[in-house]
Image (cartoon, rainbow, N blue to C red; front, side, top):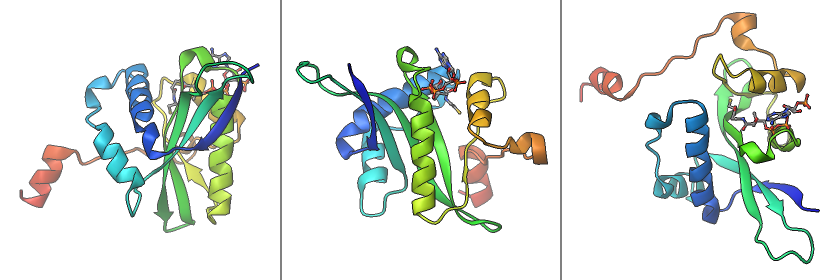
Length: 170
Ligand SMILES: CC(C)(COP(=O)(O)OP(=O)(O)OC[C@H]1O[C@@H](n2cnc3c(N)ncnc32)[C@H](O)[C@@H]1OP(=O)(O)O)[C@@H](O)C(=O)NCCC(=O)NCCS
């Protein structure tokens, strides 16, 4: 039987990661927002000072099978700093292809992020989810996450391109 492996992404995985980033954006009905290129993913994640880290979930063929390992999910994270809690991780994306969902792969990715966080001296990792995405929210809650919007009332803000340029006077 095929098995699943969660491993750190390599530069050569950027094509697969971009494919899955696009699938996630489509699922979130926000495809038009994806402007990232494979080149940018390569440069930003695999240069001298990586701006992000990525875990990929790979299906390994059973011994004797001829297929290549196949990337079916990913979790992309980076380090942030909390003035209250210090070193922290932000899990930007987590995605598993539809046909591989419900088999524990998403939970495995999240558990691996928790291990990385502890290994790196972090006391927490954060993530955001759209308000209609009940499946994902139920999973995070089941794994022990706290809904900060519910508990503390946070709203997420962003200065996007034009607004930011105006602020910067450029
Ligand atoms: C959220 C997501 C990453 C979870 O990955 P996953 O591999 O399905 O996660 P798991 O199998 O570990 O757990 C999923 C839970 O949903 C249940 N489930 C059952 N069938 C399912 C299905 N077809 N699809 C999704 N979840 C299913 C599982 O049983 C499990 O619940 P349980 O822990 O009570 O058994 C995945 O569903 C996904 O990519 N969703 C679309 C993108 C998304 O919402 N990303 C998160 C954005 S914040």
